[in-house]
Length: 163
Image (cartoon, helix red, strand yellow):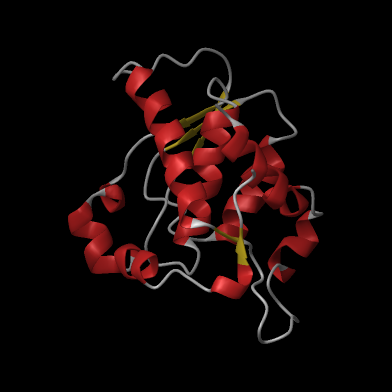
């Protein structure tokens, strides 16, 4: 069930272990034709979404999160900020509640939602995601995520699904 999420997590893990002062360097000083943050095959992303959807469908509508919890709001496609937050939260036993608005405005909305879904699939009792207004079609159509999805492909740089 978690094969797809494990593969994506392994691909992103090099970023999650970076020292805080190096996170802003992700994607800088690279060759013009390279992709600073991995891209994934459409089929792999669809499978990840299906896995996440199954988890979300089985959660209660009203979340009951026991224990210390870190609250995170409005990532808005900022992969660097998300990595910084995950770097911090990985060193605590806290559960993490993301309050929505994962996409739009920033340049890496798809990467942010991919990483968040991956964490949800792998660690469903640590990471919780609420839907923000930018996760609705009317908002993501207006503020950039839908366009990012339609323009998402660069065959030379796409990571293939695990066999």
